[in-house]
Length: 460
Image (cartoon, rainbow, N blue to C red):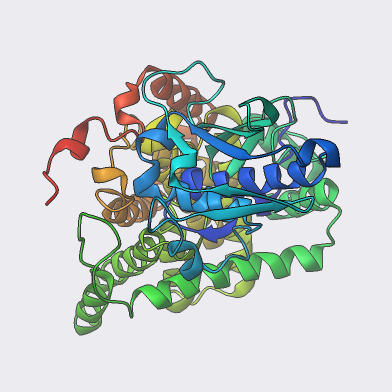
């Protein structure tokens, strides 16, 4: 049996399919709103019939940058019965174009109207377990609350509901329980397992899904990532929002092809692929959280490069993804992948560490080298702020995905060329530092757009 601190998150809770531009602001709130809709459907009829209004209260960065991130659209979509992995991003982007436009939440034969006026953006500090808090209230004509749901969007599209177990906490027990890198390595040594074997067996034990289906779903996740790259290197024009940012990936890809014979062309292609997926995320298209939507360009860039330039086999790609998931689990469990808690080191920093581990494991590196690569990836993102201009996941987010992928590649190279025993800082240690750094960082630099680059330009 595992302890209460054991990691029980599924691979497919970490790698989730959904619309951009921010998993904390779109995927999480949509899921919370959908869950509230299910609770509405379970209300006794006599209570449901008294309902007249629905209030949506947003706090933290959901309030500060929710409009730029599309939080209002995501919540309305969830209340209309849409879910992140199946919704049409074009239909989603069409919601809330007009603040006065009304939509109707339907349950128990009752229709309750909602509009932009139903959403209240609370400013200032609030005392909740997580900065990204949303409260949904169903009220009667006298303003009495008939049903209330309090939800926290904790990063990567994961949500927690007040009074309930955190999402991603499986009822199944892992075969090889661990909560730290040291515990993970002990299992590998004691049971003579590869990291990929342990991850597959734990996934089977946690979810009850057979290995063949797990493999199929990993391949499907990679396919979603690579579709985002392919769309992005073809797309041109302006991204949504008041910044009026021009897409660059298609132009960069064409230039990379012109320099294909040069020694650094692979880096040009990597930049193009990362920007392509990130621009698709910024456009609200379908991406994969890896571990978040804001960092969803790192993995598509790296894996597209591995497949099409380095010609890694499908099995090597899968094994690399499993190694990456182990790192993502450890960060989420012991620190956070939420920009609202950790700044961008929680998003791009984690993605870079996961990417470095993936490259090293797919290459055939030892577990010591995998740990070293991941540690280097985190170490050189410590203290990175999350300060998006206008609240849009565009500047600095899009280029930051390319930089995170390049750092992942360099971390892999550094770890490959040194003896892991020479590393003075363990992965477990750097995660402790990451958590402390996030705790000490000013909230102005954690998704609120109140400081830093967010104040560096005047929007026209």
